[in-house]
Image (tube, one colour):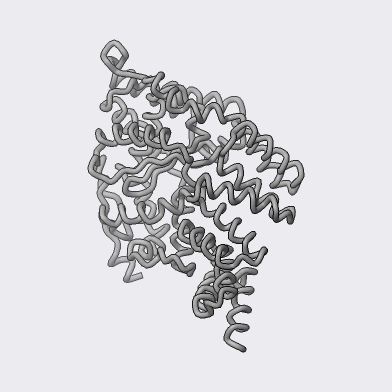
Length: 424
């Protein structure tokens, strides 16, 4: 209790200047560190980067344009497109911001994109994620990540904490007032950057139609869950634009940039049918209807050729069906198309272990663990080390997995291997 009282103090909201009660003071440098250390894990947990360099560069350009006019323009902002169908967007402390392809594909112009990115920049500038940590909800995990000891490649409890922090930050639900504050800030930033604020109105009307029509599970499980939306909030934003920016129209030089947006997202929209089939496959697989799921993934590839995520899912479904030959072929192709997704690497590593190709398996599993340390990946890599004669590496990794998953199946299996290798 005395420790908490000693840590307690007031944190200042950089946007409002108001003092807010905080159990732990987090400096700007620490805020940036948290975001940069958790962002790579967040991207991996949600499907990895969408491998379209043109679209990625376009979103980065729009995001940086908006962030330049924010209250904290000097933060190291990063903007990413996540390879996930769930419509969502989120911000981490210190500047990392992401939007899913599932949200991008429903937009019509650049002003709408700027409104979403501006809203997320508002969460960053007002330190909304940091506020929860400062009030103690993530106090211990935040301290571990800030100290720099939670990002070890060898899977252990501290790396597990970093992963938990990443998952908690992207799952964070903001308060109504925080959402309203970010709405206003996002509108301010997009207008300063030269965008017509009616783009924000258009998008919020789309959200409202989704809400009124009985939102699809993807919307409920994504944007509406983490960013609570209401008709009242939409009307407040419309009134804010009308009273604050009545002259911000095309006649005054403000833009929607529809053509530029359509060009940048053309490839994504062309592949949308393939991703819809992919999503159907995921639903079938979740119901353990593997033959039907595999058929859906194959149809998805016909509609969206050379999409690494679809190859990954097809390979993993083939593994579940215990069909190693096509599994290897699909996973190998996924890695060739995009080697920066942990599940592709881990799945291929598993197949190679099963086939006795142990050195190749170790290479794939090491890459998987660099991208995202997981219990399963750590256990498989330890097996690979054991089979290639690297006993000490195997022992160390088995111990880490056993400690991180005490009482769990993988942890118990790892503890058994430790006892076997130590001759106990």
